[in-house]
Amino acid sequence: MSNKSSFFTEDETDALQELMNIAFGKAAAELAEIIDISVVLSFPKLETVKIQELPDFISGDLSINTKCNIVEQTYKGEAGGVAFLIFPFGSESDFLSLFHLDEEDELELFADADREILAEVGNILIGACVSKLFDLLKSPVIYTPPHAIIGQEFGDKFFKGRFSGDDCAIILKTSFFLSEKSVEGFLFLVNNQSSVGPIKHALAKLFESYE
Amino acid sequence: MKMKILIVDDSKSARFFLIKSLPKDIEIEYKECENGLECVNIYQEFAPDLVFLDLTMPVMGGEEALAKIMQMNKNAVVYILTADIQRTTYERIMALGARKFIKKPPNKEIIGFVVKELADTLK
Amino acid sequence: MNKCAQILESINIGIVIIDKDFCITEWNNWMTVYSNKTCEDVRGKSIFDVYPELDKKSFSRGCKAVFTFGNLVFLSSTLHKYLFPFKIQGSNSTFFTHMQQSCYLIPIRNDDDEVDHVMINVHDETENAVLDKQLKELTYIDGLTRAYNRRAFERRLQEEFARHKRTGIPLGIIMFDLDFFKIVNDTYGHQFGDKVLQNVVSACSDCLRTEDFLARYGGEEFVCLLTDQNIDQTRLVAERLRERIEQMTIEEGASSVSVTISAGIADSANCDNRVTLLKMADEGLYAAKRKGRNRVEESDK
Image (cartoon, rainbow over all chains, first blue to last red; front, top):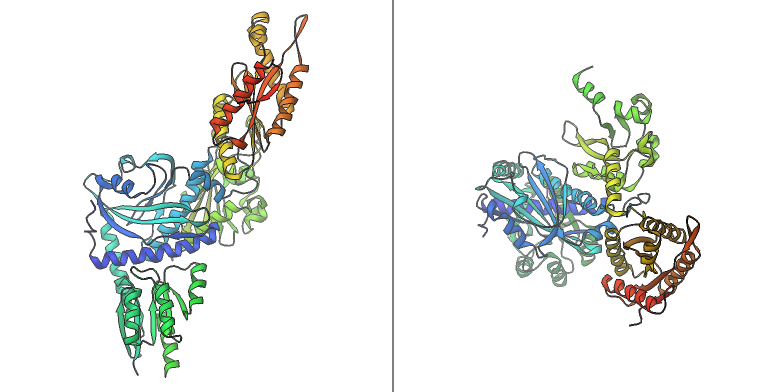
C-alpha cells in the first residue's frame, strides 16, 4: 500500500528519521519536566502514502479498536501540515486523573470535560514533538488551536478540504507511551506534497552546516 | 600515534554528522558499524581507543552492546551518543560503565572537546 | 495613535503580554475596563503580584510549554472557568460569581526567532456558559420536581460505577416508589399528585448529603445513588427517607394527606456491572411491595 518514500532519497529519509528521533527524544525529556509524566516515544518512521489511502493506512496501523479519541491540530509554515494524536476510546477518563487540574477547579456535574482535557494535553504533546522537529530543520511553524474528538472512527472526513485527491502525504509516525498510566497513543504528522521542497532544502542546509 | 574510533549507529546520517564533527587536527582512524552485534564482533579485532555508541538500534541495542564490551575490556572507553535523554536511561547506562553521555545531535565543539580530552590521556 | 495601538485598545478581547519573568509589559484597555487597573498600574510588575490567583498549575504549565515549545496553549472555560478573577455585575451574577473565560497563551518571538514573551488572550465566555448551564438544566433536570431526570441518572450511574471499579469505593443505591399513588391521583386529582411528588423530593433532599444523587426514574418512582456507602449505611439512609415521608402531611383544602414509600436497596459489593446493581435494587423494591409496603428491603433472590 505504501510505496517507500519516493519523494526523498534514501539518505534524506534516513536523515529525517534521525532528526525525528532527536526531536522526539528532546520533546519527551521536556514533556516529563512540564507535565510531570514520563513519556516514552518509539523510534519514528517516515512513509509516503496517496491521500485516498491515508485513512485506511492510519486506521490499519492502529492496534486499537475502530473507535478512538483524536486530537487534530494544524501547523502552518513552509513545511506545514496536520498533526493527529490518536488514543484508544475509553482512555479519556485516564487523562482526567493523569493531568490533574488545579485543586480549586472543582468540575461541575456533567461538565463534558473529557474533550477539553484531551485537547489541552494533546496540544502540549503535539506542540512538543512538532516544535522540536521543525527547530532542528530551522523551519519555524505556527499552530492553530487543537480540536479534540471523542469516540469516532478515523475516516476521510479528517482530510476533506485539506488535501486534493491526487496528492501524496508524507507521514511521520511515532507511538506514545504515557508510562505511569500506561496510556498508549500514536502521533501522525501528515504533510502534503508541497512541503517536500522546503523539507529537502532544510535537510540540504543541515548537511552543509557539517561540511 | 593514530587514535582509533569505532562509530556505532544504525542511521547513516547520524554517523555522517558525527564523523564530520570529529576534530581535524589530530590523526584519527575510524570504523563504522550499524548495530550492537557488529560492534561487539569488530571490537576485539579493531581494538578502538574510543567507541561512540547509539542506544536504539536493531539486532542488538546499545545497552546490551555496552555490557558486552565492558565484559571484554573493563577499561573500555565508551561514549553514548543518543536522542534518549531521559534521566532513568542516563542512570542505567552510566551504571553499566559508559564514560560519557552525549545528547544528539553532535556538534564540532562538543565532539572536538571530548575526543581531544581523551587523546591527551593516550599520549 | 498608530493603527496597531488603536486595534490593541479597541479590540473586544483582553490582551496581556508578559516576559520570561512573568512581568507584565502590555495590558490593553479591555483588561483595564474589567480589572480597574491601568497599564501604568501594572506594567513591570509580576503578574502573580497583580493577581496571586494565577499562581496555579495549569497557567504555569501552559506558559512553560509556550516558552519551551513555542506552541499555542488554550485554557478552556469548561475546565478552568476563568484565569483572571473579574467579578460579574448584573443579571448573569445569579449564574456565576466571576466572568467565565477561555484564554489563549500565544508565543511572541524576538528578532532571533526565540520566544521571549507570552501573549495572553482573554475571551469573555459568560454568555455561552450561561446558555450551557440552562441547556444542561433542560437536559438533566426533571421540570416538575427539580430532581435529576432519568437521562442524568443513567449517566451518573455509569460514571459512579466506573469510579467504583477504579477505586473500590462502595456505591449504594436506593430505588423507591410511592405506595398507592394511583389512588391519590384518582381521589385528589393530578395537580395534587404533582404537589405530592414535589414535596417528596424536597423532603428527601433534606435527608441527603450534597454528594448524594436523587433522580426521578419515571412516574412516581425515584432512585438515589450514595457514593461511599455500603449496604448497611444505605439501609440507614433509606429508613430515614421512609420515616420522613411517612411523617409528612400534605394539605389539600380541609383534608391532609399522608403517603408512604417502599424502597429497595443494594450496594456494589457483589455486582459486576451497573445493570446488576440496578436490577438488585429493583428486586428489593418488589420485595418491599410484596411484604406489605412502607418498608425497606434487599433483593431476596
